[in-house]
Image 1: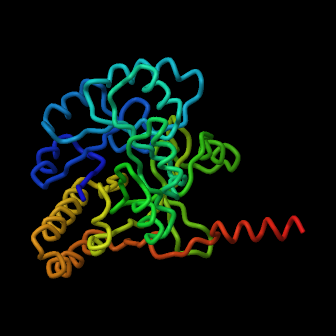
Image 2: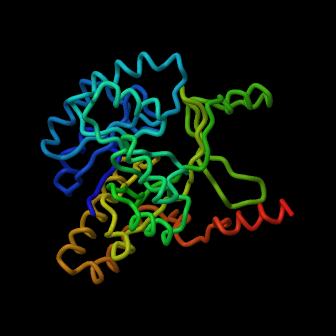
Amino acid sequence: MKLALQLNKIEYLYDYLSMGVELFVVGGEYSMQAVLKLSVEEIKQVKEKCNHKKVYVLVNGLYDQYEMEGLSLYLKELNGIIDGLLFQDFGVLQIVKENKYSFDMMYTPETLNTNGLSINALSKYGVTSAFVSGVIPLEEQLIIKEQCSIPLMIKGHGIEYLASSKRKLLSTYKDASSKDFSTNQTLIMKPRDSDFKCYIYEDQRGTHVLSYDRLYTLDLFNTLKVFDYLYIETLMMNENEAVEVVSLYSDALKGLENGRYNKEVKEFLPLLKKLNSSLTRGFLFDQSVYKLEDMRKIDNERNQ
């Protein structure tokens, strides 16, 4: 299992390289939910500094028809510079296939990669790696890994996706409610009579809702080690927290390799919790509400 993360600051690139990060994800002109949005020239400079490490670009939006010409030119510029794309719109895949670009195409929809058979079927159409959905239990993620014939990445640490919309929901709410707040900053939303909090922000690609709590898996490496990449999401992290988190996960991976993980992780966990007390297991140990056999049973009962 190799360490991957979304790069949060170019100045810390060499620090992350020294920690053993193997895959860097960066944002660009067509990215959604990106920490940094770099120009093509800046992305090229990052790749040159990374030497033999991999650099992927987030091209993970759902694009309208009027954007496709510009998107096509953008992918042409990236070809030959980076190693791969994280995408969810099959229009991106089609452009890459038609032009025979050499990207690793990592299919990264937020909620759709929930079974290995579908991922294997998509691999026949040009998907070469995939990001397993985080909204299913760990048990099911492991089954997907057993079934899949292409490399898989899972989220190891960071905030989680809750919802998004192409609409400017904060701007609409501000106009309708006459409330005075800035739509140019990230807000914290808390439902009435609940302790649950989440981030909400608006940008040129719409409105995004993300968990306030961070997923953590530092003590689960004995189980997760079958995956190809463990991803650290630095969105909503400050620079110091990101560096410390990556350092702890890097040390834990080294411990896994040298046989000291089970002992060392007991020391690492308190350090991780000191960095941020809002840690969660997400959906890792929840059970799926609906199984395929349950849905078939419901359909049969409806048809009777």
